[in-house]
Length: 221
Ligand code: CO
Image 1 (tube, helix red, strand yellow):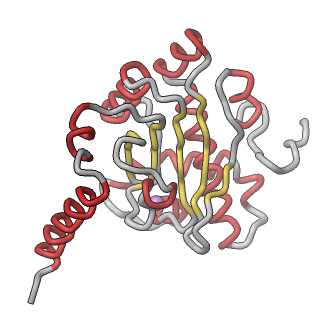
Image 2 (cartoon, rainbow, N blue to C red; image 1 turned 135 degrees about the horizontal axis):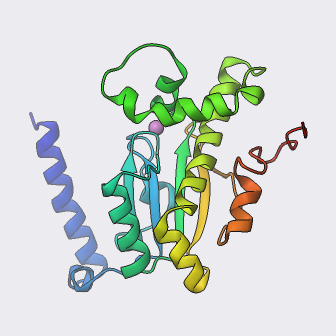
């Protein structure tokens, strides 16, 4: 019986044959270099493969993934990916994509301890606390969905405030940044923000001026 790991290598050989049938020069062109138009910042969840759900191909998308699609200002891994994508590859769009049913967000909502990952997810707890006025009246399922959306919006804000993005916007108002949520239940992506390429637009969708996309403004108090 073929093992699961052998199956991957067999699939790879089939992939090569299929690509060569379509275009004998395919791998030669791929090896020449990459010019992706997009940086994808997504969750590590196995059910959210960025290329499959967006119909993109090798070479189209530079990718960074971590648990709960977080943009953390001290994460050298992420910051390096971002700088390279924006300054060297000159991507036109950076997409933060979360997903409903996110295990990372769910873990942050509860009170159980999960070990090391609790530190990573602390920022999701902060988001929940910040928006508790909105979340507290929702049922459990709706609150989970809404925190997934708010988490994406917070990461768009964090992304917009990175040195790399601020410097790029000051140069030429690119890239556009976007916050999306993928719905595992039906396969559709639901954008949570418009196209953002300056500090005014980021203020419109993020917490310091509004914080509630598609909903009522917080009551002035
Ligand atoms: Co997730």
